[in-house]
Image (cartoon, rainbow over all chains, first blue to last red; front, side, top):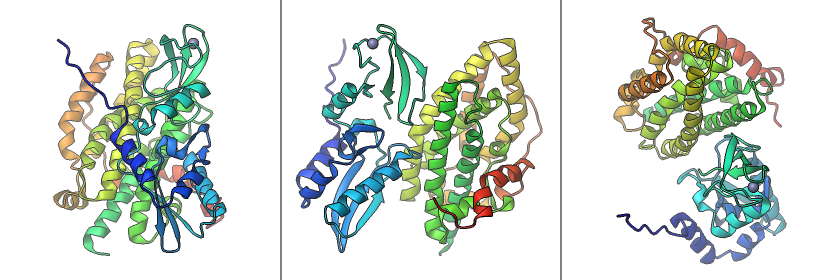
Amino acid sequence: MNAIVTLPLVHAERAALVRRRRDSACAELWNALDAVKDPEIPVLSLYDLGVLRDIRRAADGVTVVLSPTYSGCPAMETMEADVRRQLLAAGVRQVVIERALSPPWTTDWMDARARLALKDYGIAPPDTVCCPQCGSHDASVVSDFGSTACKALYRCNACLEPFDHFKPL
Amino acid sequence: MNDTDSLLTRYAIRLGDDAMVHGQRLCEWSSNAPTLEEDLALANVALDYLGRARMLYSLAGNLCGQSEDELAFTRDTRAFQNLLILELPRGDFAFTLVRQFLLDEFEHLFFDALTASANEMLAAIAGKTRKEVAYHRRRSQEWLRRFGLGTAESARRAQAALDTLWGYVDEMFAVDDLEATLIAEGIAADRAVLRATWQAAVTHAIEAAALTVPDTTWRIEGGRQGLHTEHLGHLLSEMQFMQRAYPGLSW
Ligand SMILES: [Zn+2]
């Protein structure tokens, strides 16, 4: 007999992030940073990805905590520069960026809305390999590494279109 | 700087050197790989190593007052502490992937152990690295099978790579005084105790690929003391060229 397993819909770290934002004293800064997207996936904000972990007011400005996706991800530098630019434009005087490595970033930190946005953008979300064009699960891996560190390249055997899969990490 | 910090600095630098030198070797494949997919894969794996080197050099640099760039680009061969196996020229595609396989099987165990480090930063880097290694390992295991069970030529090349590399693997498990002290303090991972598990996993995979575990008896070590093969100097001369020619250059 199979045990019935209930999976939480939202990862505990994601839930903690949502609470942190909700209870934050600087809601306007969280809102301002919603405009900062992943430079390679412009439909997802850093908050959607779970890369933006916290915003704290410091003595002379603001400290922003970011979790890198892959250790060598070249997009991190762009993300940091974009966060800095956005907050300075919002009137913050000084921006300090902290990189938090622990707990390590995981694709589980993306919520259902982010996964849907990925799919609509043409990238199969991490959960299952499913063709974003036709929905078929019949796909072959073309390359374990795709156009960026976080993606793998597949080909759909039903509609024959190639597609990127956001690798579960 | 107290004694522990000084040892920790040296430990982070040697682990950083391992990642830096190996990442550089992998980078050499960019635009030279046998297929476009492999070109992407090698470059992406190289990026993971480069990112790892940066995290470890930052950790060391914060303690010893040097920047990542100074550590990577202004030290000479005798100051580099990487394992010798990582500085060997990239060879053919089989050599690169067989070395990656031997390394992945080791790193998979090593970084798992290092997540228990008493040093929070080191444990966090290990936690991050462990996940990336799992993905690398899946790919290098797959390639070992393909070489071994592919054509006579691919099997011959994979076996030649194993035979060349085998004398260098012992160094991956060697614990010197520096590491022994840090192991006692709960900061370093004990690589010596990983040997038996590694040997069993590697033997199983090599035999499943219809290849042979080499019976070579020669052994070579020295990287941790800065005693390198002739190859490291050539690697550094290319990697460090810009900082040597234009000291302090930044993007
Ligand atoms: Zn399809």
